[in-house]
Image (tube, rainbow, N blue to C red; front, side, top):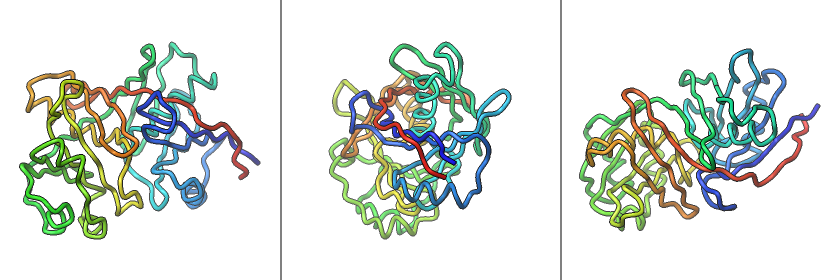
Length: 263
């Protein structure tokens, strides 16, 4: 038995930029253990597994070491491959049922716009491992159901940050988002995202992090359409548009590899 397998660079139109995700299309559900082994073999920040349904596809995401509740770049990559491979007409909405409820994506020219839940951070006291792991004094520390959220003083601080991943792995959260307002005019804010507890020290571009970044910066900058840049080594652009308890995230994608996974 074999399964179609693709690798897509998400949140970029340039190959070897953005965030790579593996997408595996299944005819029927497979065991959690098998999917985790495949994700470990892929060794990318996320591997997505897609099972067709009546009105939507069932979508699950795995890092090399665990399943996660929400993933933006692998969802964007999955929608991209559904349209590119002809599994879904380009004028139809890609619909998914996930551990975070229903998600959807539409193709708008060269951009894919996804409908995701808003995950705004609420102010909290910072644990010592977070402060020591980042090695800085934050302007703001918040948390949502998944991640700690840290605003720092400048874009330079975000870009030059060198965390202690051992300490950050001890923080009781999926990961840590670090952000600041952009100093230029191309982007409104910049960010980086660290997930050592799930086997990903730094995620290149994190769609789900923008579920927190979008409402936070929309409130701070008093604008509802913003452009974020995730300043990892690979880098990537995410357009955001908060709308109540939802966030619209837009990005681009490019296919890197097409093949077959032997089951």
